[in-house]
Length: 293
Image (cartoon, rainbow, N blue to C red; front, side):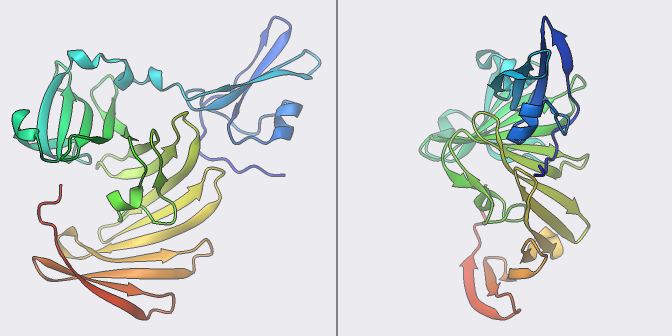
């Protein structure tokens, strides 16, 4: 039996502890490997993992599940009461910029972002509230010692779908989110996501995405937690970085469907659904939400 694992990297420990041996395993390792005491991969002990203890003879003594150690991240150690709270209508996570500042009083009754900043003006957390002042999700920034960020988490407070938040990056077939889950973004020097891991409240991996970019298109590939390839899609862009077409492919790289976007004027968008044979099966004229945040 073969286990396909990805992106559990950088750590494997085997050491003596009195009369016992301790080994660490990823959450996707198969049962027979734990019994034999033979990890096939390296694991990151800051992620969810198993800790197995063996007798000197090699016989398994005990096994313990260890949740992801999120408390080691700087963002969770800072006292929120000591942070400065500011309110904004817009937040660009790629540029890590907030804009259109408003007062706390003016935030009532409108969808807005509440930003928590350190004494040095560094963004710690950005919470998104709907117009009923219900928190929908939070951006937890992760900064290094030089105030640089190459990753952040989005924590969700209700069941939803990542595709609804960003149809360029995510596919409807694999983007379900549950309350308490997190989407962990790893970003490049341009602020674009290179990989997104979707984790449950205990830090267990459910699925992940990988992205590649050119000037005219974006390629998204998606996988289950055991690295099984699910499918991909290509997003092509028109002038002004507007989406021109999204084409979806199955695990065999066969086209499943496509959606094209045309912009007859600044207020409307023509959306065409295309089947696997390239035939248009539906057209819809949709008003553009120019005030979308």
